[in-house]
Length: 165
Image 1 (cartoon, rainbow, N blue to C red):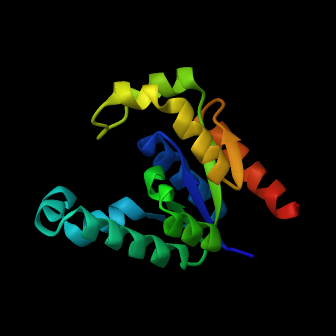
Image 2: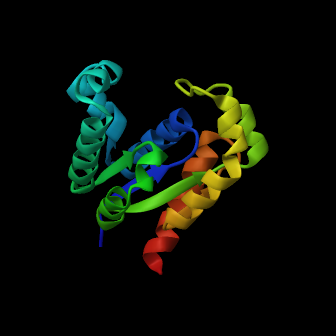
Image 3: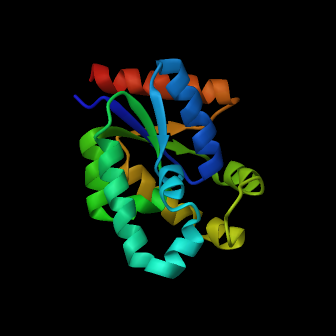
């Protein structure tokens, strides 16, 4: 049985907030792959310009595999990382993959508060496609309803049900 939980979603900042609360509720560690990479490279944009996108992607895969091997950790990562089969396999091998799903209207509303998204209009256009991908990748799909506390409770209940089955 895996001892890690990986929470992904289309709203990176929101997923991180929820994941940190889940980690606290379960008395687990928290690790964000993107933050760990940023720490390693200080400035990912400059690093990518110097060493190339392929090198950064390779380091990202190494970091995902490393983090998936942790124990008792709630992990977050940019959902796009899961589009690479080796990353998806590493996460699924080391963690239960939870998709924090939001409806399209809520996605549109929360998208305005997200930092770092280059083209929010494009993200909105691709919502349905990305939503389908994540539903297919996930072991657990938790629908976002209510406050963050409500969402944390939904995720905890879904995890409990997952392990009971």
